[in-house]
Amino acid sequence: MYVPNYIPEPVEISDNVTLRSYKERVAFIRRVFALHFLSLGLIAGMAALHVPNPGLISGAILVGTCLLVLSLVRIETRGTKADIRLSTALLPVLLVGLSFLVREGVEHQWPLWALPIGAACALLYALLCGRDYSFVGQWFLGIIASNVAIAMAANLSALDTTHAWAAVLLNSAYFTYLVYDGASLMARRRMGEEIAAVVDLYRDILNFFGYTIRCVRHWQRHRIWTR
Image (cartoon, rainbow, N blue to C red):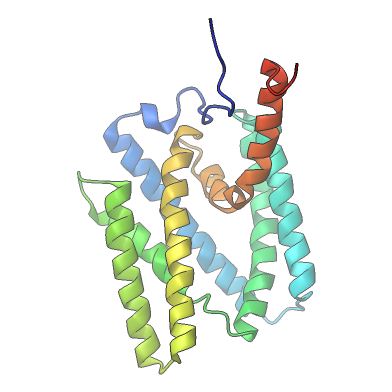
């Protein structure tokens, strides 16, 4: 007798990256982290442009709407070419919206400068690890290296203690999420889907939304919580 779990199993697609050779898996995650770092550079570059800024609330609405649409796209088109095409097409819109938020954050003195340091350390580990890639090792070594670098930058710029600690805490949360999600998305992506994987690193912030829908569908399919 089959008794279904109360929560759905983690999503995996056929021929995903985890089923490939070690060399291919490492090459994939290196490209993903490199493209993610590049996307942060694009956001920073657009934030520095002297163009009209719609403001914090409008920027947040744009980003939130884009993330919501991207989450719905993945739910409805998971594992298909439509997911890749739509995710890639919406990525520039998301980056523009994030650039609005970054500009507002800089004006409000949020320690957003810490995030590229964390992303750089994650990428450096991926590039230098050789045959010993480990997400646990990446998190442990990367979070130490990035926070030390942030502390040094804060000291050199005479940043006050409150802002320095805010930068360290923000980077710690971001770096943990980045490494965890990087490991998780490999079961949901195939080789050649690196850009879509970069989109996942952004839209997985709303994973609770998609996971809630998956749970409801799982309960309906298996008549869980119903008499």
